[in-house]
Amino acid sequence: MTYFLRLEGGWVYEAGHVMFVGHSCEYTKAGGQPDRPLSVAPIIDLRQLPDGQLELAQADRMSRYWALPMEHPIDWPAAVDLANIQPFVATDLERSHRVTSINDFGQMALAGRLYTFFSQREFGQ
Image 1 (cartoon, one colour):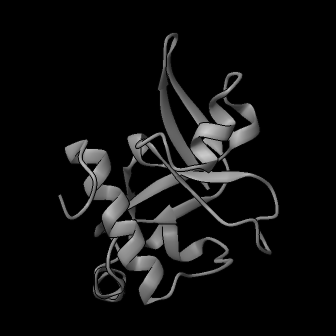
Image 2 (cartoon, rainbow, N blue to C red):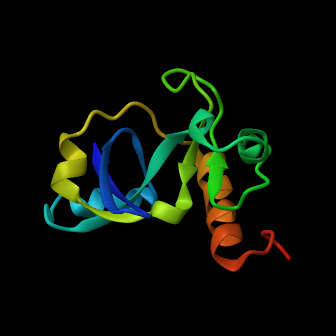
Image 3 (cartoon, helix red, strand yellow):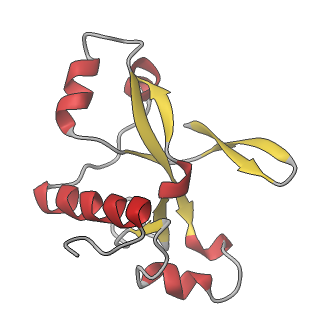
């Protein structure tokens, strides 16, 4: 999928994996509303981060990144980039190739990570 990033030189469009960031009912509701915006976040390759940040991101010590397990189909060090959550039209998301989904535990972990990112406090404090 194509998403955008704001870099020093301006807006850059990238093609890559994204994660739908929302409750499954939002995705279900979008079925009847093709122009409904949904939130997605890019999945980035942590090996592209500056020196020393890969280890910090993998250890969940950088609130902006939510490290993903290295499991098929993402068998490389990856993370969801929460600082680049952006709207995506439901029909475009529906046309994409879905590779996996997260279970209830994963949804709660994502909710906690979003709380930490936006509040800069650990979930439950």
